[in-house]
Structures are given as structure tokens and as C-alpha cells.
Amino acid sequence: MILPPDRNASDEARPPERLSRPVPHSTIRPPDHDPQAPSIQVEGLSVRFNGSDVLYEVSFALGAGQRLAVVGPNGAGKTTLFRVLAGLLRPADGHVRIFGHGPGGDTCIAYVPQRSQLDLTFPVTAAEVVMMGRIREIGMLRWPGRADWRAVHQALERVGLTESAGRPIGELSGGQQQRVFLAQALAQEAELVLLDEPFTGLDFPSVESLFQILDELQASGVTEIISTHDLNLASERFAQVLLINRRLIAAGPPSQVLTQANLVAAYGGHIHRLPEGDGVLIVTDTCCEGDEAA
Amino acid sequence: MSAVFAWLAEPLSYPFMVRGLVAALIVGVVCPVLGTYVVLRGMAFFGDALAHIILPGVVIAYLLGLPLVTGALVVGILAALGVGAISRRTDIKEDAAIGVIFAGAFALGIALLSAQRSYAVDLAHILFGNLLGVSEGDLALTAALGIIVLLTVLAFYKEFLVLSFDPVLAVTLRLPVGLLQNLLLVLIAVVIVVSIQSVGVALVLAMLVTPAAAAYLLTHRLPWMMAAGSAIGGASAIVGLYASYYLDIASGPAIVLAETVVFLAVFLARGRLKPS
Image (cartoon, rainbow over all chains, first blue to last red; front, side, top):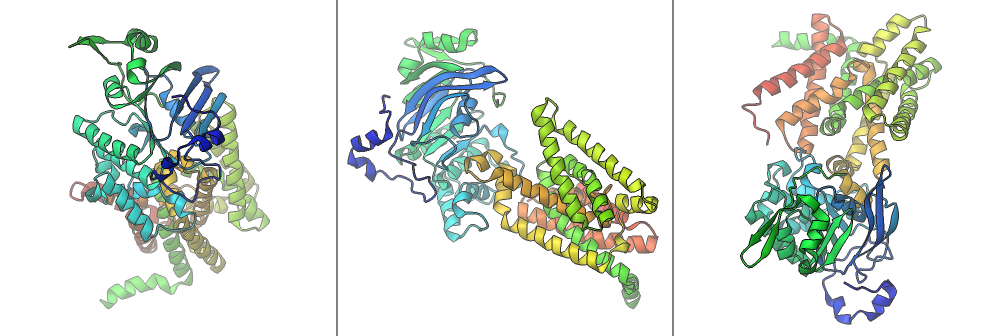
């Protein structure tokens, strides 16, 4: 993942066929938004809470249209990293560039927090949740028009939830809720999607249908960063993995990142190794959901 | 039939009853719209605190002969800033900070009021309302503020929806979150001030919370929740005022009791009414 540090230089070096990629178009991006620049460049990122480092000197880069798994034990700073990328948290140190500018300067980022962070008894329908992704586009003092509702229904169709459009969000299954939030990201025309533990609590078919949508999104050029505590999933379904535990342990293809030495470095004593078949390791973190919101 | 009509018409032969009924109807219909946000966001304690906090503002405005709303808004904004400052600069949690400001401001209001000769009457009116003392000027102001509040909610409906359901999304969409949050608080403060004349500081929370909570048991769609809450609030205002006239009880508590009865009825019937 070696990317040119200067986005202007990278513009000129970019082969022209990249322009034919269906880049989501929006009128509300800032002038320096550059969909051709690397999605993300993070250098020496440090975040402190009450004087102690939650993240320390983390650096990595990710090209546009790639999918990255963020793994690490509880309290490793995965959610904190997402909150920095989404512009919700100011780092103590380091540089973060997203499509060529600082986080929080752009609405091209869709951040889907862990489901436990939302009140799912709130009286909104799936379609209304998807519509929320568009309200910046619609603008203040205006109501969604026919074109907006069409976009909402197209987004719901793409995630296979046309028939659930009018149902309250709380009545949907965990997997369906995740798909609603992906539809929201579609309606938002997001170019970078941050999903925090989307697979937690989902059964196998739900995970599969989520990946089907993620594959389609990626094919249309959307960059995806997804945290998970399922290391099997990270190694089988992702081309890039970021292993952190407050600091960067390793970044790159799963075969290079999820090695025994790295996993011991990240998980310490909490690691469970089960030899399987021809020497493949299954490593399970003793994780549970919801307690990493810091 | 004509007996029923006469029974209904009799209180309306008094102009002060007509003014009181219209004022109560406006408050009963407008409060649950904002009460919906209060219920869904778990702001009931905050709403009650706000009603007490703005008391010194109301009293000072009253003594200076200014519109009560101006005094209430100035004090409400100062209190919000004070709560923010305390919880930001110390380890004291926000509810405790609200508690400190809430009780202190209320004490200040009562102290200012107690220096007046008409203390006992004024205190009763401020605590429990004075619906039958609504003047034509009060009624016009109530109506104007009610319309402004409803139009503002209509104008910022989708922004308030995102802010309430998913504040993180509101930030990532780069909405002016602080501004919208403050606008919602100002609207709640305006509604509280308008309601004080009808039901008083002590009971204003019921106008915000009770019909909206009953509506939440009936429907899981936000617009319907607002509409059902307004219907319950408006109907309770009418029923309460008639009860007050014929049973000779105070009008503010009568309205709140009517709302409470509706809530309990919905709660008990809930097994048969499934929220849609």
C-alpha cells in the first residue's frame, strides 16, 4: 500500500481509465474533495483521553475503492480510530487526510456506529432512516421531494429491503438493520463507509447478505473500513487488514498481518489458538460487543 | 339533547371561560409536539428543571412589566450556559449540575416574588396556573407563540429527527448541531413559558410529557405520535376545563388529571392495542 504522499502529483500520475469508474457524484463536496486521491492517509495519529494514549502513532494508508478490516482486542482503539476518521474526535497528534482534506470537512463519509449506540425503539421507519442520509443534500427548511424518495427506495432496493421500507427500524432483525444503515450510506452517496462491528450478533446468512452488498458497493468504487473481532472473517473476506492495540501492530494483506507473532503482540494472553487441518490457526478474542464506545 | 347543549354552553357564557378554554386548547395541542422530543430523548428531568429555572426570569419580567417570554428566555439561556460550564469544567455530571442550577434559580424566583405584597396569590398562580385570568393580550401572545413553535418544528422536522435519532450522523453530515440543539431547547422553553399561565410551573411537565407518552403507546410513527399527542392534549384541555367548572376544582390540575387518566387508560388497554 505505497501511495504517493502528494495528491496533486497523484492526480497527474493517475491513468485516465479511472475516470470512467462510477464515482458517486454530489454537489455538496468541498472544493478540495478529490475522489482520485487516496481515500485515507493517516500519519502518526495519537489520541489521548485523560492523559493516557488510546491510540499512539498509528500510520496507514488506503487507496480508493479498497476494503480494510480493523482488528484488535477490546479497548484497542478501533472505535476511537473510526471516530477520528468520521471527524467526531480531534486527534492529539498526527495527520489524517481523507480524499485530500481533513476529517469532518466532507459529507462523503458514512459512519455506522455499533448498533448498541442507537435507540432502536425510536419511532422511525426503515425508509425514514435511509432518508436521513440525504438531509444535507436536501438542505435546510426543505422537505424531501419525489426525487429524494426515489433515491431512498432505490437504496433500499439495492440492499434487498424494498418490502420493509415502511416498517419501524426496531422491528427489523440485526442483519436487516445493518442493511438499512448501508442503504443510508448509499443515499448519502458516501465514498467512504466506516462500519463498527457490523457482524456482531448476526447469523451466517445475514453476514453473507451483508457481504454481498459490501461487494457491490466496493465494485462501484466505495472504500470500506470495517472493524470486527472475527479474525476468520478478517482473513477470508478482506484483502487488507489493520491490526492494532493502541499502537499499530501490522497492516497489509491478512497472510502477512495475522501471523502468530503479531497476534500474540496484539492480544497477549487473551489468545486462543486451535490447530486445524493443515496447520491453519483459528484465533478468537474473548470479545463481546458494546463496551468499546470510548 | 338541548339539556346537553345547555350544559356544554353554560360555561361559555362567561368570556373569561372562553378565553381560558382557547388558551388551554392551544397549549394542549402545541405542548405534545415538543413533548414528543422530550419523551423520545429522555429529557423529562431537563424539561421539569427548565420550568423551574426560568422562574426568576418570569418574575423579573413580571415586575418590570415586560413580556414574560423575554425574561424566561434570557434566564433559560443563561442557565443552559451555566449547566454546560459546570459539567465541562468539573467532574460533576450534567444532571447534578442541572439540579444545582434548577433549585438555586427556583429559590431566587420565589425570593424575588416573596418581596411583593401580593406574594401568596402570585405564588399560587405561578405554581399552579391562572387559566381563568387569561387576558385578550395573553391569548393573542399564546396563539402567536404556538403558531411560531409549530411552524419552526415543521421547518426543521428532518433536522430534529436526525438530531434525536442519531446525533452522530448529524455531526458527520455536518449539520449545525449546536445551533439545532439550542433551537430545540429554546422551543421547549417557549412552550413552557406559554404553559405556565395555564397549568403553572409545578405541572407544566405533564403538558409536555403525559400526552406524548400516551401517544407513544399508541403508535410507532413519529408524525402520528405528534398528532395523537396533540389530540390527547387538546381533548384533555376541554375535558379538564369543564370538570373544573362543574366540579369546582382548580383548572390546571383538572387538565393534568384528564391527561393522566387518558395515559392510564391507554396503558391498561395496551394489551389489546398493538402499536403499529
